[in-house]
Image 1 (cartoon, rainbow, N blue to C red):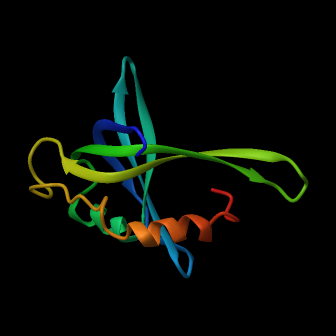
Image 2: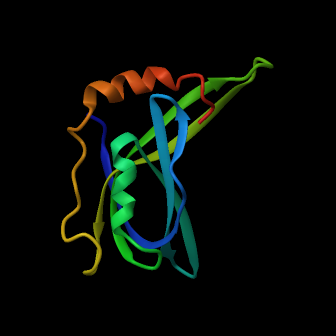
Amino acid sequence: MANSYEAVGTLHAVMDTQQVKDTFRKREFVIEMQDGNYPQHIKFQVTQDRCALLDNYKVGQEVKVLFNLRGRPFQGKDGSTMYFTNLEAWRIEASQGGGSAQGTDYSQIGQASAASAKDDFDDVPF
């Protein structure tokens, strides 16, 4: 299993769910983290059934995000190789009260479909 990471910050933006293919959907969100004098806006994504995780939270709420780091190359039509990195969230929890009382762990849901979804979006450049 991949290494898991954790980030805590303020929910800054929640985008709409995107149906990328018939068998693959994703939803992106941004948290703001303080890093010295400058805030950092970090974009994460959730996929498939995990898109609903964000329905329990509001912009401005403190959240803890547990995620895996994902990266892959993409061969462009011109022959150039581009590299994409995603922060794939698998759990979101309220950091200081409010929101969902407990984060929902979707890590076991749809593992078989997640494997096929990985193959389904290999031609998508993100």
